[in-house]
Image (tube, rainbow, N blue to C red; front, top):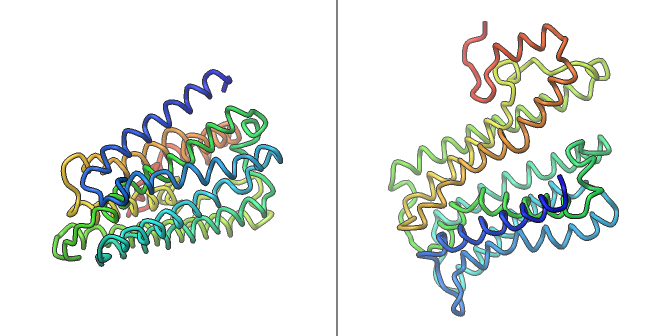
Length: 294
């Protein structure tokens, strides 16, 4: 990516963040004249920009995913604290924040240990040597955290107290979160075990959940964020409903920008002449696991 493209991408990223911050703040609790939603929206960007500086100096990507997880946790904790300064914390807000924190701690620690174990993350091989490209990536990381959790954050900072499980979406949302979380954990663990076997160094994984889906971990992540969004919906009003783009954003990010697109490009290059892989590619769903095997 050129410097000009990186700078324009940073501007576009911040513009999206500002727009969502504005619409999500409608109906938000106010603290000293400022909507809590906007105050909390700044947290992930600030954290990513601060850690970008030493990461650029050392040209390392080791702390990128970890900072993402820390951003989720701190944003939830600060939002809960600020809400309690204005009103009582609702059970819905507490549960949504807890689910986000549980997911963030689990995934962040998993990804951090994986990068430390493997020594590098191939996604960053070139960009970490380019200032503006690397800065764009860290800025996008802030947007990733904010937009991913924007529906949940809007619900937490809304101050509205609609009884948890008083709406059918609550049961559906919590069920989806559990399904998604368990799926992601199992898929990640299966792939880690597969990679730890030296005999699989030049093989692709085609066992466990990975036999039913080419990317079951991403299916799990998209599903759990859909669950959180559904749990947030009963307390959102007006323009706040735009924050329901959260799972759509996660889907686009994981399938079109990062995740699936990058991994499959590398896999196709590596195993393009492998008949078994080509058969796997053609007959295995990209995301939604098939229930019945061939």
